[in-house]
Image (cartoon, rainbow, N blue to C red; front, top):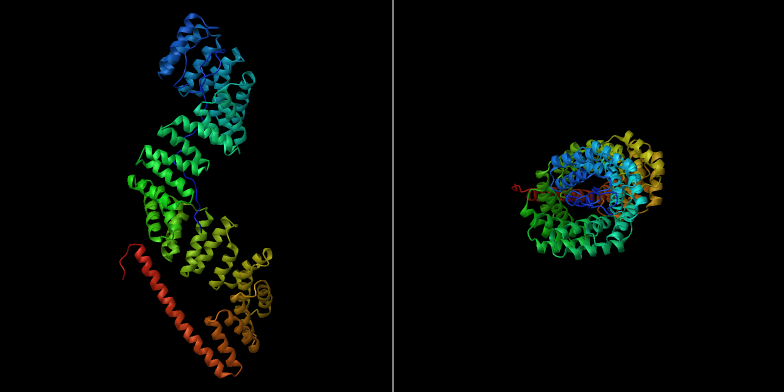
Length: 550
């Protein structure tokens, strides 16, 4: 089973950012970064001198993150001028910054009732609605802001963020683009636009935004790293790898930079380069399991089973509750024929994630290879129940029951499969085999002939078709069919044995003895080859697992 390449970025640097507005009703564009960039209140409309003084003090306290003082002064301003929309808006911002969203919501509503065209208060109300999960209501509020002031950057930015969160990248890109039109040099807006533009199928504009951000970043390693991360998240791996490379030059020997550079190169199938950077990252910080997991995937792709096993084991040791780490270690054990290890690790994966059909499927394969056919059949049953679309799953259910000698159940499963896939050659062969074993010779004929019509050179089908003639005691026909089998596979041990039987029944002892001798020679050769393979597999497995050879 092929490993799936997946992005697993360890952070999301571009989070949704809903902007606070601390402005008067007539002050134009609001500051998007209100927490750190609030300006004093310049419009004294509706404010008494005492209220304006308190409000200026509240904004200054808010800028310095002195929230208790900010709340005290904002409440003083509201008491001095209870009809001021600006005072209620500032108090709402302070309350929201203090984590009291419901109280802030009430203050923003009071500000809007006092001044329905107060875009700053409406923007803040939309932000609170978004925080509360009322996405549709928040969108309505931000759109009201834009009806009043179509160039209000905050509302476009917040709408873009909301549409991005809901997966509507087209609308998100539209609003971020309008925000950029107002302030084309704003890197924050450009970065937000970039994060949706590729997914909105606006690649040229996305590249333009990326170029602007990169130019503005200059040699600022952190800004370049943020840009590279956004590009990587949008699968622009060439650009991301180039930028991560620049950051690596500016900040050498940094774990996060090396890791992300390695992942970008991995996604470009530049595995040898990826392995170099990931190995350096692991040397700097061996604790994160994902680095070892990626190194395991790279080694596995190169058929370097020993290193793949080592790295997957490192990943498992660091995060024993990650089912996929166990699954990939099991997969590597299976590739070297270490079936006990594959069964054990797949069992661990199933214990952690019992609703993943692929884990049962893989354990079923390992059990079958080990000769545990009944256990394999149960695993394939479980896999099919979870995910009936798994490759050839119903055939495997039937075949493992055939191998276990449970012919009745196998027959039922295969017949149901053939009802929907009448040209499934392997299922036809297995059904023919079972019918022969159960003495249903007439019923064996049709599926085997159908299979041969579909695949005339299929040796297992040809062999079963020859065995059918032997069972019917039509030895002349059996000889003709068995000779076809041997012409396609001269080392088919059982075909020579069946020829020995057929010639014996036809009273042709010389030919029978020739076939018996060839059968014994091939049987001895098969046994020797099997023993050597078992020994070689055992030795290789022990070596890869770091055990002493016997």
